[in-house]
Image (cartoon, rainbow, N blue to C red; front, side, top):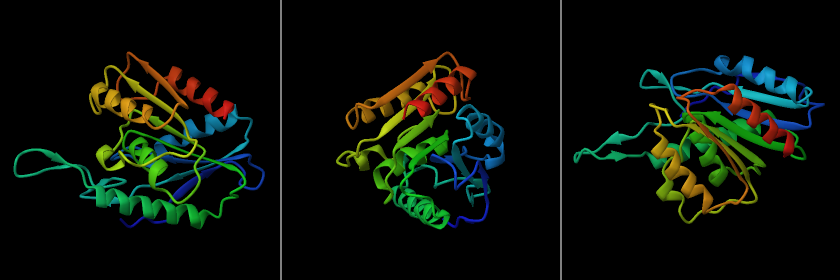
Length: 211
């Protein structure tokens, strides 16, 4: 995956911030779609965050953080674990290029495929991550992470019962998997679809304030 490290949006003051946040948009979208939301969140955090919103590269004509699952000859969905690993390496290179103060907490998060990427980074990134927010996402290549461990990570995870893009059943499988890895798990569910509601945003902000 080729990620243009200059193609990102920043919000907040890097030098004076108390926390660094890396936020990943969903499949087929772009970082501009989350700029208003992240500006609002930083305002609610009293402008104490430095937020970086990178843009996913184009894969098969769509912006995508990693190759999507494909069907094999038997019609079964097969996830591209190697492709996911390459994407994680690229994100680590991006973090390195940002020269973030490692004495400050690093929070990662995202929506949909961006949420899935964030969860995988918790297991594979070479950087210390202090928290992860996964909104309307799932755990990619979960079988490959069965023996992997987390190191004292806080996770905020939200999903709607009516999500048609990533099903609530996928969320339940992800939740069950994460519960075997950490007891620092905050979840928000409700009668909404593949979106971020005001209630989800409020709980996310409160979670950020606590950690």
